[in-house]
Every structure is written in C-alpha cells, then in structure tokens.
Amino acid sequence: MNEVLLEKLQWRYAAKAFDPAKKISPEDWSTLEEALRLTPSSYGLQPWKFYVITDQELKDELIPASYGQTQVGNCSHLLVFTVTTDLSEADIDKYVETSCSVRGTEPESMEFFRNLIIGDVVTGPRSKDIPGWAKLQSYIALGNFMTCAAMLDIDCCPMEGFVQDAYDEALGLKKKGLTTAVVCPAGYRSDDDKYSALEKVRYSKEDLFEYI
Amino acid sequence: MNEVLLEKLQWRYAAKAFDPAKKISPEDWSTLEEALRLTPSSYGLQPWKFYVITDQELKDELIPASYGQTQVGNCSHLLVFTVTTDLSEADIDKYVETSCSVRGTEPESMEFFRNLIIGDVVTGPRSKDIPGWAKLQSYIALGNFMTCAAMLDIDCCPMEGFVQDAYDEALGLKKKGLTTAVVCPAGYRSDDDKYSALEKVRYSKEDLFEYI
Image 1 (cartoon, helix red, strand yellow):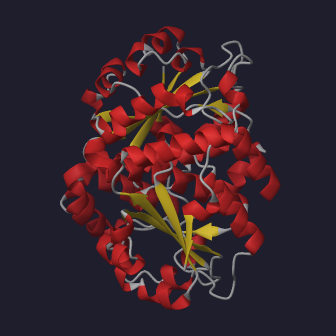
Image 2 (cartoon, chains in turn purple, green):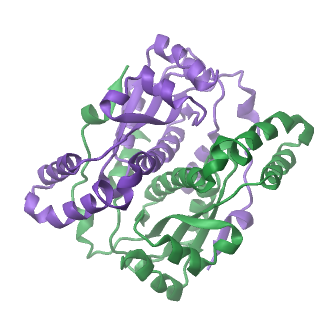
Image 3 (cartoon, chains in turn red, blue):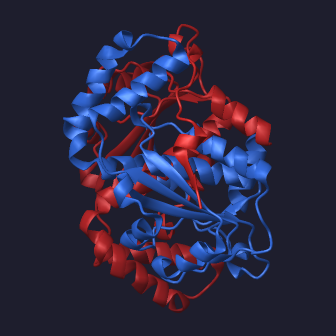
C-alpha cells in the first residue's frame, strides 16, 4: 500500500483542463461521496453541504464567477464545498439525536457532551466565527476528497479563486444559511493539459519537518 | 480500490487512547511524511512546517496544553501542524526559485505568476490574514494525512482542543514566524479504547448532498 499511495499522490496535480467527454462513473462518484460523508470534523458536527453540479449550463455560468477558469466548465463533476454560517442549539440537538439513534443510546447520556459543544460553538469561543471554523472543517473534507480521488485515478483541481458571493447567489445558499467555502472540479485530465507533465514543486523534507 | 478505500475510512476513528507500546515503523512514517510533503496548497506555497514529536518528556508536557487529553502522551508520533504567520516577497521568491530549479525554467518566465501571488498574499486581499489562510491549507494536509494513515492501518486523532500559546511556547515557534494550527497524535489504538467499537455518526447522503 505504501508504494501505491505515494504513486497516486505523485500522479495527482491541479488539473487545469479536463476532457469534457470523460465522465466519472456513477460507481466511482458514489465512492467519493461516501468518502466525503465519512470525513471527520470537529465534534463530529459535519457543518457542511456538498453541492454536486453536473448541469452543463450552470457549470458554464460559474466560469466567470471563477475568474474565467474553464476547469469549472469542462470537468465531469463540479464539487462545491459549502458550510453553515451559523449554529444553534437545534443543530446540536439534531447531532445528538442522530448519534443516539445510530448508537442506540439515550440523549441523557450525552448531556455533558451536548453542553460542552454548545458552550463552545453556540455560545462560546468558536461561536464568534462559525463560517471560519466550518470552513476549516471543509478543508479536511477537501484534503480527504483529493486523496481519495487520486486513489481512484480521478483528477481534480482545488480552487480558492472564485467570487464567493456569486457562487452563493447562483446556488441560492444564503436562504439556506450556507456559504461557499472552496470549489473542486473533478473529472479526467485533458491530453492537452501541459501542466500534467510538469514536475511537482515541493520543499525538501529537511525544510518541512522538525523532529523533537 | 473502491472497497478498500471505504473499508479503511470506515475503520478509522478519532482514537482516544493509543497503545504506548506500539510504535509506527520508520517505513510507514516515512510514507506519511512524503504524503504530507505532497499535499497541495494554495499557489503551491506550502506555508507550513510539520513538527514530529517522539520525545516522551515533551509529549507528556503537552498533555496539560491539550486540556488533559492523554492521547498526546501515549501516541507513537505527535504530529503538530504549524503555519507561517507572515509572508514576504522573499518567501515568494524562494518558491519561484525552487520551482525554477525543479522544472528547469527561468525566473523571468514566472514573473506573471510571481506578481499574481504577491498581489494576493503579500500585498493583496489574503495578506490581511496569513495565519488564517495558512491554517486552511494545513487542514488540507490534515485531511490528506488522516486518509493516508488509515490506508496504512495507522490510527490518529485530530485535535483542535489545545492551548495555541502553550504549544507555540513549548516548540519555540514565535521566533520562527510560526504558530500551531492543529494537532494530530498518531499510533495504534489501545485495546481498551471503548470508542473504537462505536458506530460512526454521520448524516445521510440525502442530508449532505445537493445535486444540480
């Protein structure tokens, strides 16, 4: 597995052009969705919603909102990571209920944990910037997604270069209490993408690691 | 690969107790370091340094700075993701030089890209909160790390519950222009960790995905 892992991570790159004729199979996409669903998050709260856009018209419409980056249009699946802009006690209760239902326990046994979470993300320190905190969580999902995609020989391109308001508007996020965190078109690299042949630029282990 | 991927992601969990007798092998750790090194980041800037702590005394010393979470002490390798608190033109030049040296190109050919980056992270919009932006990047590395660890049957525990100043102080980060972003002890789960047997709590695909 060690060799496979590194080979796939070496193979991946930020695809600048996808082959629009090549689509991710339903089986592979379903695996990637399940991988996203399994992503760990702070307190397990999963403060996100994943938008999967395959509608060509909408993908093309989002190119200007992505500073003209055409990957958004020629990808197979445009994945948009959106996050919650606010958390209430009701959100924590929903999590507690889900947890009790999955694990067959009583809400009373989770009272301490419930209050701990509320005291942090609803009324405490992290409540001051829920979108910021939630955005961090979504980047865990992004990291997980990109690695899993590479394992399935699927290309993608993580993108911070987009107009947040334009995405929020196009997806009708505001009224749902969501905002766009990061964007990641996925599909298969175009044979014409000269970037795929470039050597990866990374600092040395000596530069990046400290051992104590 | 699809089945293997989901099986490993199902198997992983946030380990609350590690078996202190079980250490990650040098071969596996080397793979995880290389995986971390290959993590994508915004503009490819890699605004991070990874601290790998195996010294038992320091690990134990960091337990109080982790609100008493003992995983920090009984893990095999305590991985601390630290990020840069500031970016200067010199940092961008270092990146450009590395890129030219790896790809055999001339710095002149990267002038447009260099100015684009500087106009964003050194003098532009993202320069206003470099630690925040860099922290986001480190969460990509965290997501990648956790998935790769699971692929190698290695346990870990992502932790936001720590005192940032105490970690920064213990690692002498301030004078290096770094700060602690997130912490992730890694190793092998203890047989006594009752959390390892719990069902994972995740919302349904219907709850988490929107299709357009």
